[in-house]
Image 1 (spheres, rainbow, N blue to C red):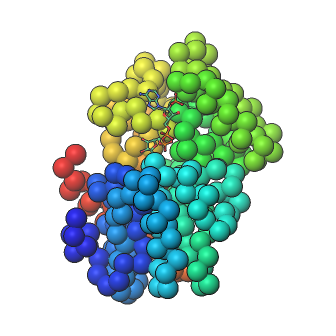
Image 2 (image 1 turned 30 degrees about the vertical axis):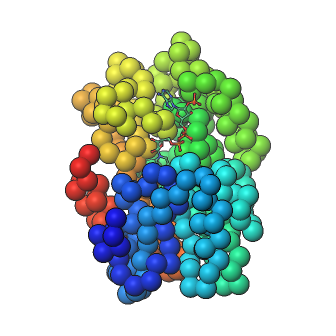
Image 3 (image 1 turned 90 degrees about the horizontal axis):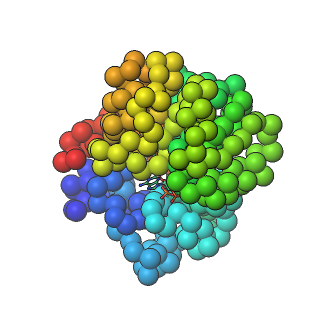
Length: 291
Ligand code: NAP
């Protein structure tokens, strides 16, 4: 994809490292933010497979570079290529943002969880005292669970296809947060999963189930009017449609994507991110995309 097609102008100083990334909304959001701030720079989409990762990261050390975002499949592996990880990236064991310091050092951070919490507040849900079920036990589930526990949830149940992964994530969250919340791990087909959702005030889908427009991570009959439903997939899903159909409040993951991007932008530029501009660009890119 040409740079002009990505909507930016000026030197490339930031970008997204991952594979595949050509359909990402990040360039649209960041290039709109640069333009709104009068910064004559560009954000690029860097399709990067594993053998080229180290070389791509080294290029960020060059004078004038600000940093990068990192996505699947490199969020974990990239950590070993950086000079420093902030506390959150250490706790997550994963990096979604690299920031180049003035002396060329590369610092890894992770804005996914903080972005989720801002989006949750925008959605009108208070984590304090909430009873939450999170579906999935990958990087997104870990970031969300960590911040929900720090945010004061009363109860958090991680439901995942592979129980051992959910237990591993919860163990890490307990160690990193040292908070007094009731934390449970369940396998997806465990009968207790339905009971956990029945008691929950918030359901978060942090698995990719539903991204194909077909899959349902939990049966529709588990949903109810007073359950807030949040899907991290950044477009509508069968889960969100089913939640709306039964009168529940439902939101997709676009706002989380926008807010994590805004935090990255602020870190690179030391300026407040123009969130409204980024939201409009993200929405236009998503809804203008073919699928
Ligand atoms: P990941 O690290 O690959 O984790 C995926 C998790 O989902 C794993 O726990 C996996 O279970 C489970 N899973 C995968 N396929 C499944 C299936 N067919 N049936 C049941 N469970 C399945 O992915 P991630 O980075 O955490 O991302 C998860 C989702 O969040 C993706 O849809 C991603 O796009 C979205 N996300 C959104 C944002 C945002 O800003 N909105 C940010 C990050 C991620 P096992 O443990 O059994 O393998």
